Length: 511
Ligand SMILES: *[C@@H]1O[C@H](CO)[C@@H](O)[C@H](O)[C@H]1NC(C)=O
Ligand SMILES: *[C@@H]1O[C@H](CO)[C@@H](O)[C@H](O)[C@H]1NC(C)=O
Ligand SMILES: *[C@@H]1O[C@H](CO)[C@@H](O)[C@H](O)[C@H]1NC(C)=O
Ligand SMILES: *[C@@H]1O[C@H](CO)[C@@H](O)[C@H](O)[C@H]1NC(C)=O
Ligand SMILES: *[C@@H]1O[C@H](CO)[C@@H](O)[C@H](O)[C@H]1NC(C)=O
Image (tube, rainbow, N blue to C red; front, side, top):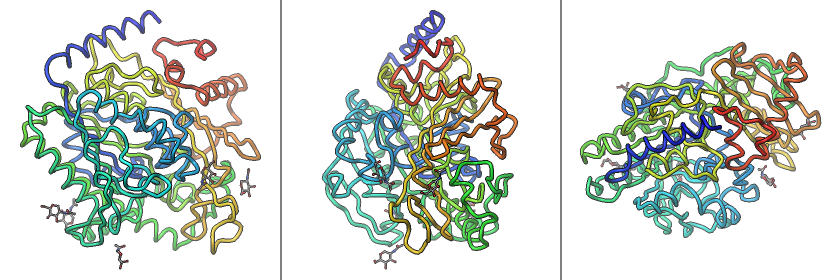
C-alpha cells in the first residue's frame, strides 16, 4: 500500500509539472458506434491510425464494460459501471436517458467536469439511444455540461433524422450534401474548431458518429470500395457453440446461406461508412494544425462496443460476452504521449472519463469506478504498476415478452434477424470477470438463466474462445473467481479499483 501511495504521489507531482503551468490542454473525443477491432475494424481508418495511433498511444487491450450502446455510452460519460449508473439496456424503462438518469448520473459526466474547469464544450452526433424522445424530455433537453449541442434524436442513422440543435429541432432528409450525418458532424466540429485559437479558453469536443452502426449507409463516393472483401473466416466463424450458454446453442448451425451473403455485405458496408469517419478525423487534425492547436490538444478515439459477423453461428450483432463484442479500439495522442507507443495495459470504457479529467489537469475523481490512464499514457519516473487488472463485463439481455412478429417461438427473445436467429434473450444476462496480468488472460462468466450456466476461457491457450473449459477449472480457483466477480458486481468507486493491483490488496479487505 505504501508503495502504491508513493507511486501515486510521484505521479501526481509529475502531472502537476506537466500541466501546472499555463493553459489547460484541449480535448477532442471521437466515438464510433459498434466498431469492432477483432474483425479488423480499424483497417479502413488509415488516417486515424496514422494521425492518432502512430502519433500517440495504441491500447491493445481496451474493453467495453457492457457490449450494448446505451449502457456502454452511459458508462463512458460517467466513468461508472452499469450497476452504478443503472442504464441497463437501450429502453427508457431500462434506464436509457430516462428521468432517473437525467436527475442523477447525467449531472456528473466528463462534460460537467470539464465545463466546471473552464472548458468550452461542444457535442455533435449520437448521444444515448432514447435521447430526444418524448419520454426523455424531447429535443428541449440539453444534457448538462454542454455549451454547443447537436444531439441526434434516438439511435444511429445516416439520413432522415432530427437533431436537437441547442434545444431546437432541426430536421434532415436524405440529400447527401446536406444531410449525411457523419459529414454534418465533421462540418459542425470544423466550424467550432475554426473559432478556437491559442488565446481562447480550452475546449472539449465530442464527436459521436453513426458509423459503423446499421443501417450502414455509406457516402456515395464510397459505395464501390471493398467490393472484394468479405467478413473474416476466423476459427469461430460459423462454428456451433455447443458447449456455450443457451442463446448460443440455440443459433442454427451452419448459418443459412442468405445470412452469410447478408453478413458479408454488411461487413463491406460497415467499412465504407468508416471511410467518412476517417475523412472527419483528418479534417479535425488538419483544422487543429492550421489553428496551431494540435500540440496542445489530446485526441481520443474509441467505440462503444464491438461486433460480430458469423462468430459461433450468430449472423450479426453485439450483446455477447466474447472478445469480439467487448473489445474496442482506443487510441490517444497529445502532449507528452510518446508517438508510436503501444500498451498491453487493460483499459476500460469507464476509464475514459477520469482520464480526461486528469489530462485536463485536475485529479481524477475518486468516486468513479474507472481509473485514470494517465500513468500509462505519460509514464513518470516509476512504472505504472504492472498490467494486472480485474474487470467486470455486465449485460442485461433484452427481450420482447410476446416474441417477434413473423418468427415463431421467440418469447423473451430479441434481435431475431436475419432468418429469425435471435441475438439476445432475457436470459442472455451475464456478469463476467475479465482478468489480465503479465502472465494470464481469462474470462469467467456467470449467466442469469435457469441453468446458472458458467463459461471460462483461458485466452492465452484459446484466444478464439472455441472451448468452454469451465469443467477443467480447479474448485479453489473457481471459488476465487466467483468471489471476485461478486465483489465486482457490488463494487462502487474505489472498491472497483482496489481489486486492481499494484498493491495486491486483500480482496476481503476491500469491501
Ligand atoms: C428518407 O425518407 C424519404 C421520405 O419518407 C424516403 O423516400 C427515403 O427513402 C428515405 N431515405 C433513406 C435513405 O432512408
Ligand atoms: C460539409 O461541408 C462540405 C464542404 O464545405 C460540403 O461540400 C458538404 O456538402 C457538407 N456536408 C454536409 C452534410 O453538411
Ligand atoms: C475507394 O475507392 C476509390 C475508387 O475505386 C479509390 O480511388 C479510393 O482510393 C478508395 N478509397 C479507399 C480509402 O480505399
Ligand atoms: C429494459 O429493462 C427494463 C427494466 O428491466 C425492462 O422492463 C425492459 O423490458 C427492457 N427492455 C428490453 C427491450 O428488453
Ligand atoms: C432461455 O430463455 C428461453 C426463452 O424464454 C427459454 O426457452 C430457455 O429455456 C431459457 N434457457 C435457460 C437456460 O434459461
